[in-house]
Amino acid sequence: MSKLAINGGPPVRTKPLPPSYPGALLMGKEEVEAVTKVIEAQSPFRFYGEDLQGTVNQLEDMMKEDLNVKYALGVTSCTAGLVVALKALGIGYGDKVIVPSISFIASATAVISAQAVPVFVDVDETLNMDPEDLEEAIDEDVKAMIVVPLNGNPNDMDKIMAIARKHDVKVIEDVAQSCGVEYKGHAQGTIGDIGVFSFQMNKILTSGEGGAVVTNDVKLFERAMRYHDQGSYRRQMKPRYPEIQSVEAESAFAGQNYRMSEITGAVLVEQWKKLDLIISNLKKNYPYIKEQVKSKAPALNHVETVDEKGNLGRIITFRFPDKELAAEFKDALNAENINARLMYNGKVIYQFDQIKHQRTAEKDNMPFNYPFKNPVIYKDGLCPKAEDYIYRTVIVDLHPLLEDPDVEDIIEGITKVYQGLGLEEKLKANQA
Ligand SMILES: *Cc1c(COP(=O)(O)O)cnc(C)c1O
Image 1 (tube, helix red, strand yellow):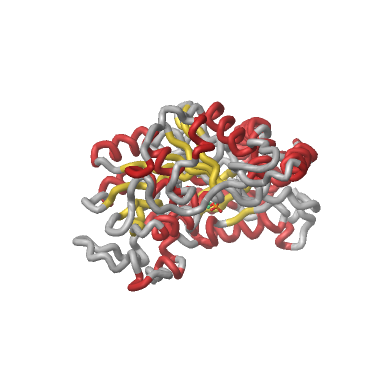
Image 2 (cartoon, rainbow, N blue to C red):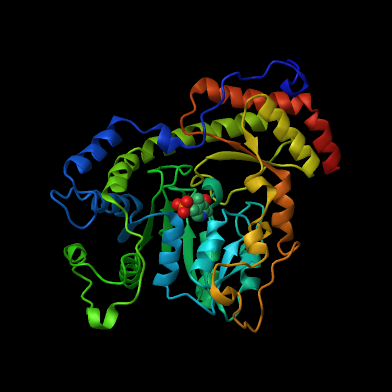
């Protein structure tokens, strides 16, 4: 094999792999036509217009059908959707919400926006929230947990739901990164009490910005719908939900505006139709790449999954014995033009300044000023496994639009770096 690119040799690829916004790369004339219809109808608002197209309704109906869930609600983003979910559950000032230590920061900032305090839980070998640690983190103030299947890797929902039910803690599934991920044949997002999706640019499907909330619980759905639309239940929604017969005088409460526009809805209806294609490409390439890498680079340590079939295969992940070796592998692979990275630049959520310092935009620094019996403190060492793994774990993105030669390049790149860095010997020496 030729000299490593990092040492001046020719790289495995000269052309970069596709960037990590698959939905956007799949945008085409279908989206253009759908958006054009909304504009030509002069009806970009969900609830009325000259010739309402009903795109948001259509998106919600497709999600209900494909995810096998009773209710779906389009919102402006996943962050907004998480706040909607928390408010649907009645969570606020004086409550704590469990959040995994490795996730996008929004999983925690949404909790703070809802005036509750995040409690971070450590991860296990899957890099997802550790169910053992989860149970220890529950105290009388913990009212909910946000569960995140990271990068398409499912959570152990049987264990998580058992703990949640035992302690009467509600479960929100934040499936922002993992639209289509399954646990034991069920779509994640529909297993807990309420699920939240993202359609931001870097997610699997996109309209630039956007999100959705799903649930099987009619009461939660009504509260979610109200919170996302100033607290009232619009007459235009009523024909869709004859089972909801609430009286405004008793049920209205102050909410927000997190409504999805018909333009966003139009894009997402077309994007949703492409989800099967994306998932089938990922599920074709991932097992092949993993198997090839295991045979050609056998000493590499793969991050585990609780459900290989449900895993979306968005990434292939390697754990190294120390951060120096992880950095060496990552840099060498990038030099070959195979994208490799650490998650969140090696930071767990509570190491980001706004969280670490518990600083909010609110008066008296609400909600952190609440006099909890058992106060929440963030400091290094809080979740030792997450802090350790995040530096030793290298992610290689697997794009849904990889062509067969790209797939071979990724395998070749990993194998070349493995050999060129002498990883077999180094990793074996470390295991001994
Ligand atoms: C991206 C992301 C979010 C936020 O999504 P937005 O739609 O940008 O608000 C929330 N949670 C996780 C796990 C994410 O990856």
